[in-house]
Image 1 (cartoon, helix red, strand yellow):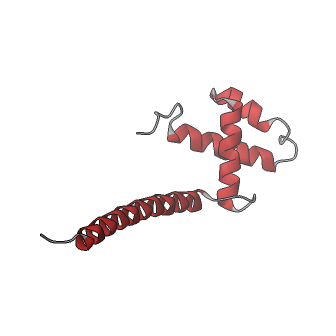
Image 2 (cartoon, rainbow, N blue to C red; image 1 turned 30 degrees about the vertical axis):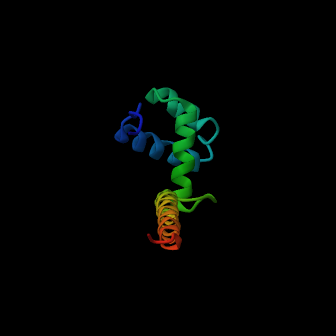
Length: 105
């Protein structure tokens, strides 16, 4: 179960949008994240992380997009499950092979 969110999605989207727009304007770019975070009552590092993620998702910054990260996590879960299933099948195969090799009475 994931941890509860400190900031709701609406606040997160609004703060991110304001910060991205402020950073595009050269006159207000310096200190925009810290200023907007203070106005909205959000921790500056949280806002900086949201902005970075939004820029990556928009293709403005290099990195793994949110959809790619979710897909990668799902594939990694599937690989773990398949490896576990293979291990179980190998154990079962060796057990039954040993049963067949035993002499019958």
